Image (tube, rainbow, N blue to C red; front, side):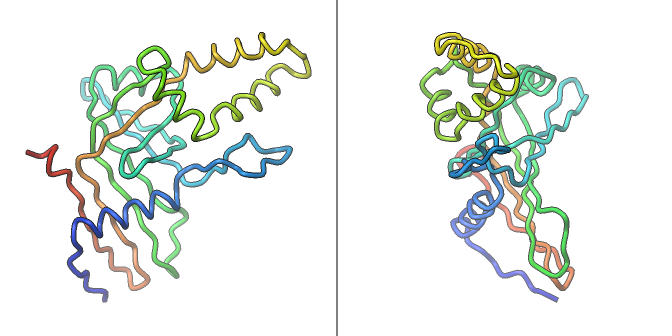
Length: 198
């Protein structure tokens, strides 16, 4: 049976970021006919709550270091975060395969809602970085069904959709990295934001 070794907080953080790199959505460098412009990989399950009513939503996610970002449409998760910014999230490799080492994350933190109106610069920078404009273009082309609006009309439609989307920024204060090993041991390693805990 595997005996977990002590890992420094810096090494745990490095392992968490490597796992996020391996799981998060990516820009598709060569999108084909049936590509939306993204390479979809492992989903994040975001848990929100309000008045003791929990809600869990699977979502595409991106990250900068330990900070997670999700583009969300209007709905229950946004309404919950407006009332309660404390969230939890999970990312795990599926299907579980006992022949190889696999990992999962439990993330606890605070969510911030960013829109075109609240922080235009940050919203547009993240939308550009993670190819949201190309993804929207593909969806709009399908939605328009062969109609050819002018460039100005197309841009107006794009901006209308972007105006309805919220960028959810999740700043973690505690992350649990669990490893599922071939010998059925499941060591866990924790990272805590000591500044947030103080």
